[in-house]
Length: 110
Image (cartoon, rainbow, N blue to C red):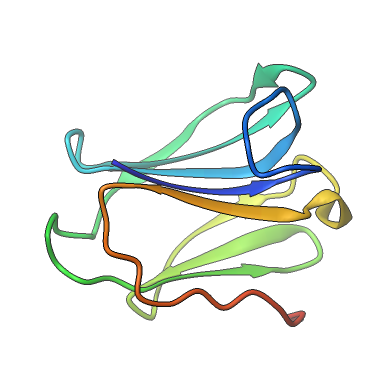
């Protein structure tokens, strides 16, 4: 599994909000998206995973006014509506069994 999280206040799960949690679950063949707020997980949104285990992939997350747009290998994957204020995001964490080549954080997309 590989997890990408956009956190509020710190890059851990010590009770702080997580406006976007993205879990790539190769064992299930799914990508699960969710948020964590006020000590509780929200409703999971699941979709089939287009990424093959062991192959390189490119994920881009763009923050729009009302949703995140997720692109995988330069193709639209899914939108995830904001459940928490976009301005609350302060940290990024990436965890799991992967070789990370590049991270770009910055800019604003409209």
